[in-house]
Structures are given as C-alpha cells and as structure tokens.
Image (cartoon, rainbow, N blue to C red; front, top):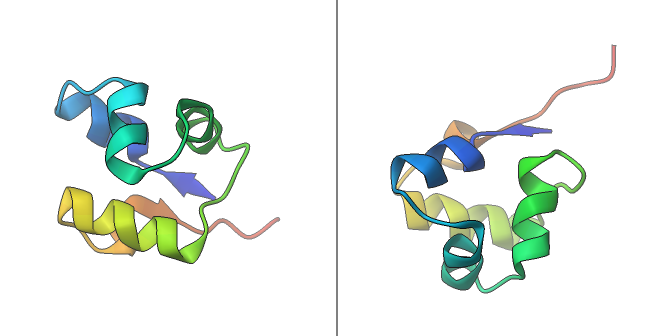
Length: 66
C-alpha cells in the first residue's frame, strides 16, 4: 500500500516522533508505514485522516500485486 505520510509530515515540518505522538503509535510504526513495510489498521488510517483533515484515500492508496 502506498501512502503520502512522509510528504504530509514534511509539509508540516514534523518529525517521525511528533507524528507518532499525534497518532499515539511508536516512531518505529511511522517509519514502517512510510517505507511501506507496514499497512495501517483501519482505526489508524481514520486517525491519520482526521489529523491531516483528508480522506483516507487521499493518504493511502491500495496497490494490487501485478
């Protein structure tokens, strides 16, 4: 799953730790999300969408295996 978390975080000049605090997860979780090693749970995706005031689809894009 692709996502725009790194870009959105950078636009706000937030560190991974600051975003992690806002989403109530670890910095390692943010790193794993940004590098595509981890897909967010639905509650985490909703929380991120509310934080950035965007639709979930504007942050996370599903990519089917080709």
